[in-house]
Length: 466
Image (cartoon, rainbow, N blue to C red; front, side, top):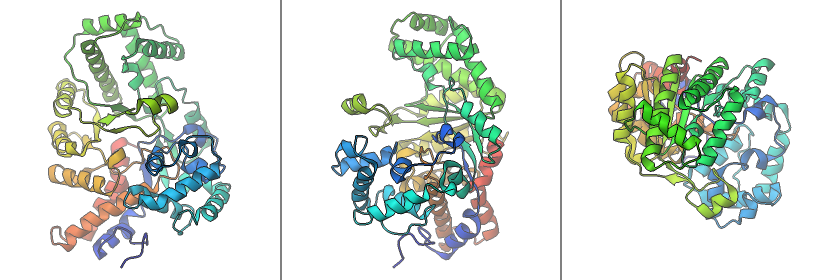
């Protein structure tokens, strides 16, 4: 019987062990999509204790604690930091076979060097040991990035963000590249005229440009896109239920913008046309600069209206949705491709039923200009666990070229989430290793090792031009 979380964790045979230890493990990390705070990096924050770095903002853990019957006081409420941690420690044994159990203990091992199992009995000891280490320079935000061998961090930023913290990081000479990612979702969120117009007013203020018509809106967004580019940005990102790809005419969009800018509610058709037009304009901007556009698709958000009203968005009340994917994605990509304005693209699905849909869709628009121009993104959110990643890897392998895959990202708000890259790499090496041991792939460790290194790091570095 293997020991839990030893050096060969997840690796089931000698080939997998060789691929991981001699190839995957040594590669640096490019985190091309995350939600880390650039302010924390700029100020090189030291977290006061383990709760602050580990539980604050982590809705994965919050959902588990609620399911375990923990009162909200100990999750997002008024309880003190150790009391919250203690309730999490009590919950951990109940998370067995949930990826949280693996992630928790991987993150204790690296970077803290703690190999003890977390539970109610070990909570105090682990809390004090980890919290003490967090006061050391190697465990500040920058120290953690260095420990994990991170080379690039791409944060997620609204067009109206000042990017002052990115500027400060760059000016400080910190060797890790911390680059902004353009997330313009609020510029197409026209469901609520009051909220939308307040955002447009903010955009007008930031750009010092009047936004009285649709052309002026596009000019203002273009100016922020240009600014992000000057700050080193190379990606955009969109978090959408689905791609919007309605037919529209320019005069319709101008009229729709005038209507909502006047404070009037749009009907459903008008909203879909406006969102569709904005996605096209965003895509054209990305293509012109050689950026990569990312689409995170399929989340059904804010399901529990009572709790969302109490706690706000991104607090653990989202789930997988069942939105139409195939036809809208096809129409959208085809519109840009037909005008030779299709940027490099990554598609992430949240519903595993869409794995084969995405796996075949990317092949429709790869045109030989660069390897993997349209890429199938790694298992996302509810799918960034062992089974979800295996399903995504298998679908991509069966329908495309796994060897051109861009690999893992954290998609996290926590500076302790980088062992997820290690988790992914172990899973990848194990899958390839099993194929070799089963005689389904040749025992060509030179080529397979190169393939593993490329998926772990080299493909992303070359694709994004970091």
